Length: 145
Ligand SMILES: [Zn+2]
Image (cartoon, rainbow, N blue to C red; front, side, top):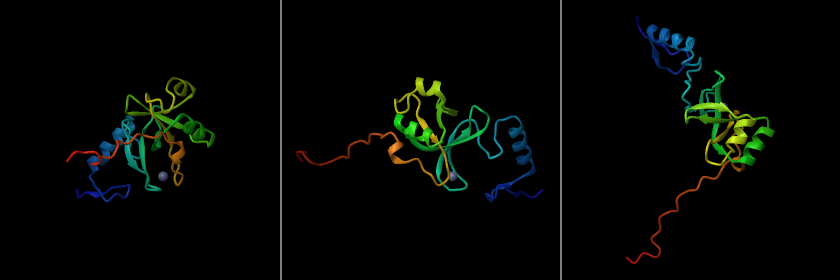
């Protein structure tokens, strides 16, 4: 049987066996309909083309978050703006942050990074994001040679 085109329009040829395997993985909850797994990874939003952190959350639903890590005030601003926040559990699975998570692992404290849920066309404002220190640029000033 000749390969068919990928149903999501990616142009990737898909055989009937691959489609069957995909449906089995979706049935078992290993893969979501949109192709996400429980291990979150960097994915491109199909609507706005933004790079996001995406995966099947512990709720069993697809979760998409903006990449910028929030600080505590940024998380509050995100929540007040109606954007849920998410963390990574064991560095892999996206978990919605509830009051228990927020209290136990404050955003920006370094234990569990917090991310704002993705909204197309509304990137996480820079003022909500924790500032990650950049290494000082190498300089030749003060060198004896
Ligand atoms: Zn988007």
